[in-house]
Figure 1 (spheres, rainbow, N blue to C red):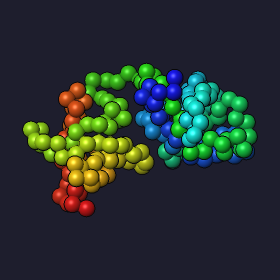
Figure 2 (tube, helix red, strand yellow; figure 1 turned 180 degrees about the vertical axis):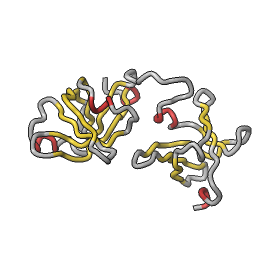
Figure 3 (cartoon, rainbow, N blue to C red; figure 1 turned 135 degrees about the vertical axis):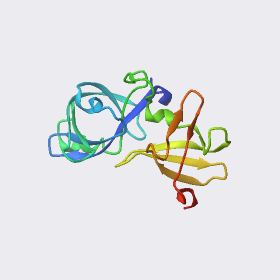
Figure 4 (cartoon, one colour; figure 1 turned 90 degrees about the vertical axis):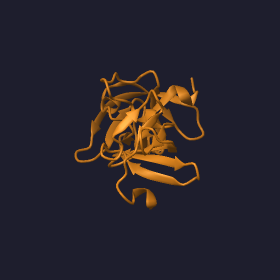
Length: 176
């Protein structure tokens, strides 16, 4: 069950909260229920096998893109510190249903990037970086890497089934 292709990273444990074992999670998912609804999750600590944990409670920190979660059997700060820098994961089959025209952001990884609908690919999406805004990491054929804001004005169209997305960068963005 540890085959990484069968798992989705939904967040990264980035710190501890208080003394009673709560951890702070930087979400890599647009679905807050991943961090608030009790149930099984999995934790991948570097150098260790994937292990199941039970999410007991979770809440979003006001004004921040961080969640504080409590996991079963993590009852003190020392146990919580052992989880810092680990990934919070769910099975790949546990994807929320989407409306027509929506897609899961991690499905963008591997897509070709084009500047025109009938043009050749200029690069490939290699990663998605979550933060205040989502950024697409695009690697060009010559090895250069660019971080592009994933906003409708710059990435107006995504063709998942066809395997590409359209990039309409403002002047100078790709010259940096």
